[in-house]
Image (cartoon, one colour):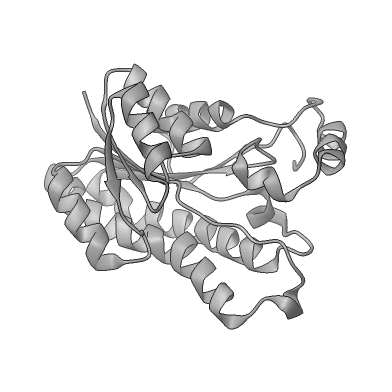
Length: 232
């Protein structure tokens, strides 16, 4: 049984990942920031351990990982999104997006590294987006953070491989989560029609891709698209 830490685990993709890995008998710990009710629901459903923590706060992350103890797998799923014109994106929002989406990974990886280095083994899965691969109009800051995650993943994979640590990334397409609440049904339907498989994704689609990367010992430094063929 492995200890798996998942950030952003109270809703959407994170909650699906918690459910999937817990069902396999792993000890699953997840971080969440605000939604206590959603976190408690995941705990009651899956038997996982929940820790309230803003991943952008490095000291808070260290304290949580000290409570968790030894870690085998880290899944960096926490992230926030924004849709809006570049010129309407204020500096505070820009910084917050990078602090959560990018610095949050930096904080969590550094907190997990002592366990990984001690064992000379470990697995990290990051979460980017198809917009991190190709960019999206009216999502410049989101695309920028997700593109940074792809570069971080590849660089960490090269740096950590001699220590037995694998690092990979999933790049979801349009996944039906609360993050889609900013999109109307017409837009959702249009994306589904443009997607070769004919429908949008579910959180469990991404969770299963994460499971593959966790269980693939000869795979590192890779970006696994989970987008139904929307971006090829």
